[in-house]
Image (cartoon, rainbow, N blue to C red; front, side):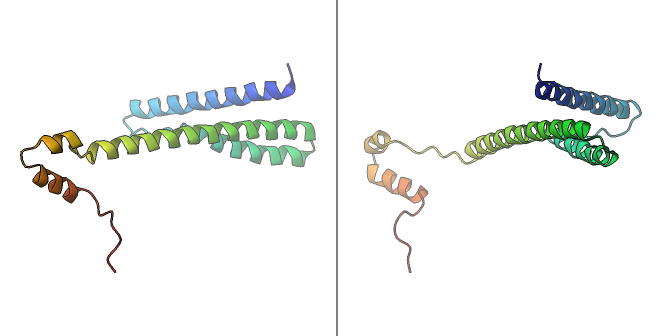
Length: 140
């Protein structure tokens, strides 16, 4: 197994461990009657990566360049994971907003057959046109 795969597995393990710690901390706060906090699952790997980069700078300053390189690669993998999770969160939010917008602003426009079969088809067509936004040239 190559060292980059080992570092990737280690970075994933570090992320899972941090999720476990955050979950246990949240559960402990509930037990003592304190208000629990929201766990930012999508931002957690980015925070871990930044902390890891600070540790990497200290390790590099102490002279252990090989270990500093490994920590920097692990931080990179965590940043990639964080950006991927943020992208997924962005897509979910866009879908939620679109779904909410479509359900609140839905207007039932009659189709052309319903307008043509209406006893007062001219009135129905005028009513339909009044609901549509102006598509003509601006007055000016």
